[in-house]
Image 1 (cartoon, rainbow, N blue to C red):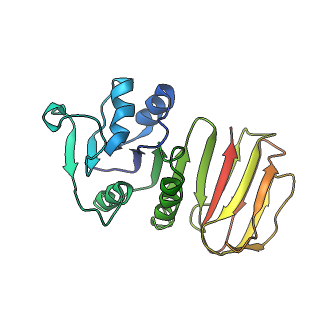
Image 2: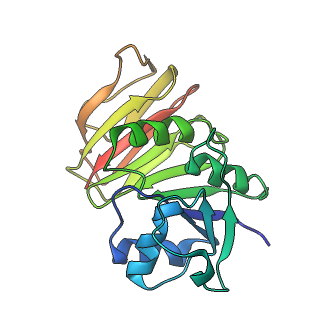
Image 3: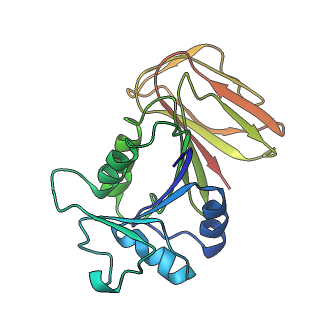
Length: 211
């Protein structure tokens, strides 16, 4: 099975049924991570895989439909998100991971999710999506074009020290500037056109777009 685009639903603030539905249409593989199952149950759709330590998913194992592949991992030295990413190592053609339910609720989970995402293969596009924010990881291998968002607020925050960050189409342009977790970033910038771009030579950057 060729898997390029993966949808992972975590147990943070649940996505809308509409967002979950259209993300499912684009995914080759969908994974409910523990209580991320609840979003699928509410929308009356099924993921391909239910994965995690199953301590908060809100159901009985024997009631899982046969169409859903259960992967139960009880190890407590990794998060359920890390367990899901470990499973994705099986797929060599992976191109994009979209994460729903990765924002909101607990701050420690949010920071942990970003830390975990920073370790994903830099050639893979990583997106966190919610009703209010769209967050995209940018690496040297995955530059970003933002289309149709004139007037939107956008922030650029480094996950790791970043070399030579450059933008086009923003109100306050950035030209070959180094960013660091010590404080250099771009917060509350503005998309001044319907086509903006962000790239860097080294490092890992979160681009946070307000919807």
